[in-house]
Length: 405
Image (cartoon, rainbow, N blue to C red; front, side, top):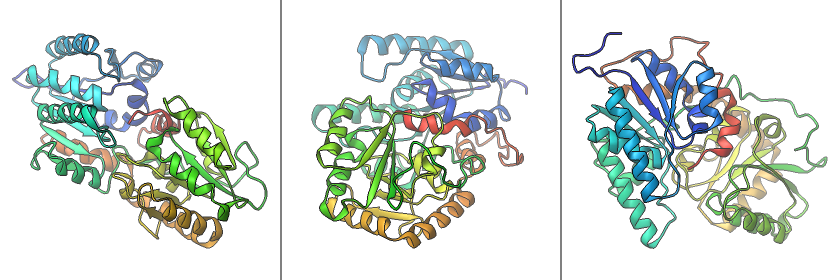
């Protein structure tokens, strides 16, 4: 490819922590490489950057702490400005809050022509007081520095407009959602086999996969599963990181409600656990678009989740799973009872879920939507190679449990 008269070409993809780029951005990197060159990944230091480099992806580390730090954030911003002045990219694509704020602010200052904010969640939802006001200001600043804001779900798009965080003309969303899709050749229905997640014979195995924290609705789940009507009818398998500030509190809530559960930490491959699940429950309070629902659906596992932003887009109610209001313990108990007692409903919903994601969430199709908006004059079909390079996306079970939101 020849460089433009402006001297700008190539693209930079950035995430706050490298696991996000390593797991969720491989299809984007592949497609970008066919539109522009060179393509660079920028993230904080971590082993995943080395793994990307081993796979032939150029990567550079810039320390970007997730929590606010005026001094460290200023240092990181200076590093970003220097990097962008040196590289002079045509495009910057930013995911996750801190990386997006720093990269897009530096990109605007250095006049990068295409600046895409890939919106994968909204941290300010659920916050109150001064922290919410601060996060609102930072969100508006981030979107103001972008030339395009692309939400990974229709409901997140609507919520962003509702909060007046950017202009309608700048905002779009993927259809029907997600920022990277799901590899349905990797996540496939599997026969049950004895293992760590095997429940007692005749007991329905409910799966929860995600960070163990109040944001994921663990409190409501404990209240619902702890009710006498459900006693002895289920086993709950919890898979995900327990390192959030309130993780121990959430596990204590499950124990205090006499919930029959087994807790596992993050795993490299969720499929052995998921193959043991009769259905997935995700009583979340906020999401961008829940990747775990796509993975479960691809494996023929139906999902019970909430009408929270993002989650509501991941399930077709009564077809691929069930939706309940956020923090509505009564509705959650009713839905859990139905899913536990009706094997026919679970089977029909699981089959429909698999068909739905096969038809709508091919990774090349989802990423093509993003890049058609980010670089409309560098149009290349992303679906011409049926054996596309999906090795890292096939490892997404580990990242889905660790990805910051």
